[in-house]
Image (cartoon, rainbow, N blue to C red; front, side, top):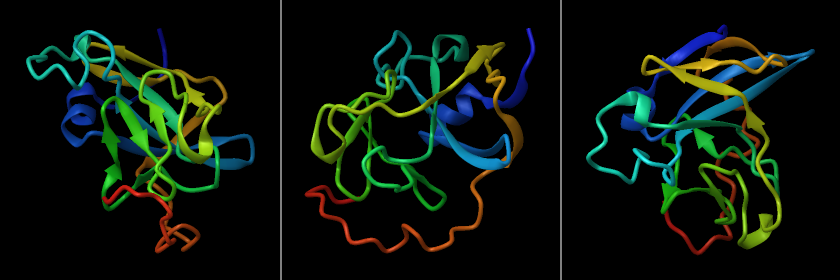
Length: 154
């Protein structure tokens, strides 16, 4: 068993999401972790206390419809009913599968990143990525202040 230790499952659960930056080839990639709400012990299970029972998934931090961050430093990822919601158009991606069946991104799936939970900690196990640091790069303004066409309010 190998991999880079990222954070604890409890931290992801308490914050609702957790982001980091990694290197893939010559490019930096933003990645975020979310609890998988549809599995036993998932975020929707208020009684879950054991981190081993708290599955976590990792996704590239971009909406598949338009290049928008799903996890933002100031608010994290907005999750509702077992989905991560795009802050621009309101498309909802399943936290466990990454698939979207509504809105502008319907029929697409987020790119997954391999992670593993061991001893209540989350490890990056994706051979294509090298961990760089916790958090996201400074925002270059590409998606800040974008007018939302979603009916959802965050």
